Image (cartoon, rainbow, N blue to C red; front, side, top):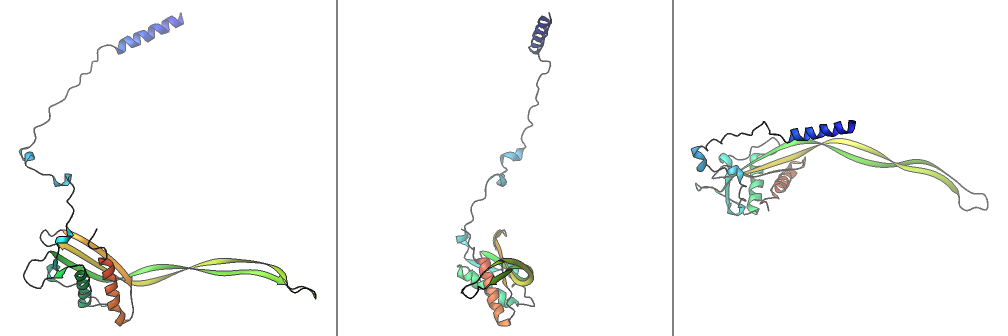
Length: 207
C-alpha cells in the first residue's frame, strides 16, 4: 500500500511540473543609438600601429633647455654625452629654426645603493699524529667547513635618464635610464657619464 501511495505522489509531481508556467519572459526594446555614434571612431578598440623609428632623423632639446647640471657634473658634460649617443644612432641635432623630429630631455643624479657581498671563510679543527720509529707517515682526523659572512655596504651610483618625444604630437616615444658606479676622481667622471648614457641608449631604436 505504501509503495502505491508513493508512486501516486511521484506521478502527481511530474504532472505539476508539466503544467503551464505562470512566469512570462518580457523584454524592453533597446534605446536608439545616439546620432554621433555613426561618425565616432573609438581608437581604443584597435591596437596602435607600430611606430616607425626610421622617420626620426633630427632632434632638439625639449623646450630648448639643456640637461640640468648638478654639483657632481655640469650641464655641458651631460649634454655632450647624450648628443654623442644620439649621433651614433643617426640622430642629428638641429641648431636652426627648422622643426625637429624629436624633442629630447635628459637628467643626471646620484643615488645610494645597498650592496651585499658574501665571503666564505674556511675554518675547523683537526688532529694529526706521527708514528713510531718505524713509521714515516702519520695518521689523524679533522673537520673543516666554510663559514659564510655577509657584508653590507653603501655605494653611490650615477643614474642617467633620457626621454624622447614626438615633436609633432608631443607624445612620448621612448624612455630609458641606466646607472654606473660613481668614480670619485674628477678625471673619471666624464667616463662615468658616458658609460651611463650609453647603457641607457643601448636599446634605441627598439627592435
